[in-house]
Image 1 (cartoon, rainbow, N blue to C red):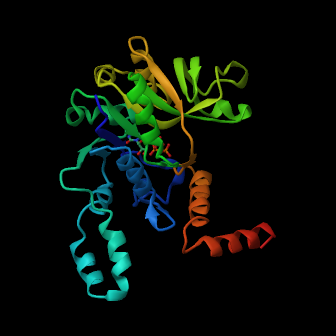
Image 2: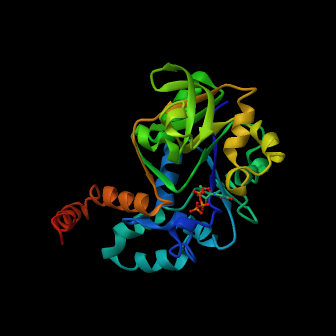
Length: 291
Ligand code: UTP
């Protein structure tokens, strides 16, 4: 069955970048001239997804407004011919009617719980989960690459990215069974293994294609690491019944949920944006030379 729906959980508190995220959702922090979330929505739409389920929470109302009509703003921009391009950029952010749902996670009990909150909207079909604080720069989009892999093998597919071996203990990594090009059949996954015990250096990245059977496992999934209901724990249980593949995507990821990752995302995108590339190069040169 084709992947037509994606869940974007946006209900977390973003504690790693507080106080910036005290009154602004982390997912709306700007990366040059677009919120991080816009890059992720573009990735999702480029993968042929027709319906996005946002799992929101208290204080996240700005996300719904961002994807809606901004009548006064659009009207005001339309009065000035010099603002025609900006008006186009603003109008591009609207999601087509009926293409988005918003459901609420009353408390951030964990990623697994956030995904479970979308179960009635997803129904009985395979779907994608895309973490919106991770931007992936890739062509075709990371999720499009995964969907193409899923179309060949079915089952469950999770995106992975190789990391230097000395850093594996900071991440969730997969255990490989067999490999065919970028696709790795998995035998397991472990959270933050000691370097010498790590089954691979393939880090789990925040994009998943899952079968709907995950929902009944999430239903009774107890708390795991950090006292949160973890998606990983339910995936480990699903792996006992269904095939899981890791897909080593081609592209570059930026973890905008951390200070350094967010900074890198801004620098990388500023260096490529036609309006900022030249200035960004000059600024970087100036500070690299000591200010
Ligand atoms: P993170 O763990 O990176 O986000 O979850 P967080 O909890 O907001 O951030 P920190 O760790 O406190 O800094 C990845 C994604 O899952 C969402 C977050 O909004 C983020 O986009 N999430 C996480 C939920 O929607 N609900 C949760 O209970 C937990």
